[in-house]
Amino acid sequence: MRFTRIHGINIAVKDLEQWTRRFEEIFGVDGKPVDESGFAFPGLRGSSFDLAGFHLNLIASVDEGTSVSRFLERRGEGVFLLSVGVQDIDVATDELRANGLRPVLDKPARGEGHAPVNFTHPKDMAGVQLEFIEIPS
Image 1 (cartoon, rainbow, N blue to C red):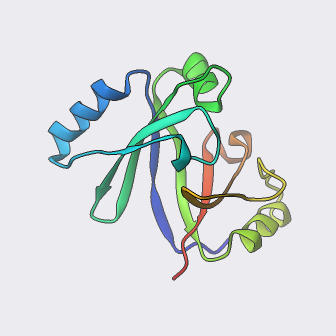
Image 2 (cartoon, rainbow, N blue to C red):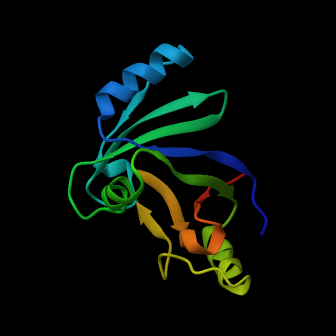
Image 3 (cartoon, rainbow, N blue to C red):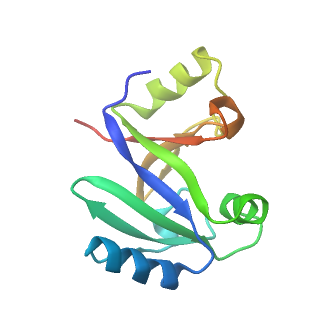
């Protein structure tokens, strides 16, 4: 699988405001609010920290039934997914299948507020969900 870079890490949190303030204090960087339009799936909101090109994102669920909500119920707060950049999301999705991984989406999600993305099932990667995000070079 060819990828352009490690794009970032997404951390699931219950109290977005509390953890945003804490991460701002620790890293000395203001968190940029991300509303629902910035996610591939509805019911989420977050804060994004650009740490010299590495994206650390805090994600909270505003609706029950989201994957983040289910993650928080089962595992509690913590690393939700690892995001890697790819040049072409459609090619990457085909390569996922060719390597025996199960993409979460049949076709990559494309939306106005976010780059095209797809995900692997966590069971395919030692419990870690991977997000493949199209970042043209």
